[in-house]
Image (spheres, rainbow, N blue to C red):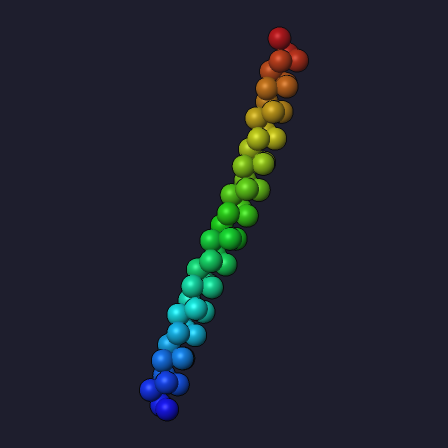
Length: 54
């Protein structure tokens, strides 16, 4: 029975590690998406200003 409990705990620990990795990756992707939107907005603004100043 001890061996089964150790195996289950090991599997749970591995799932917890995987979950932490996935959560970190998700946050990274969210930050990248926000960054991409901010850059896109900045580029549009620069293009608009540049076009207006011609």
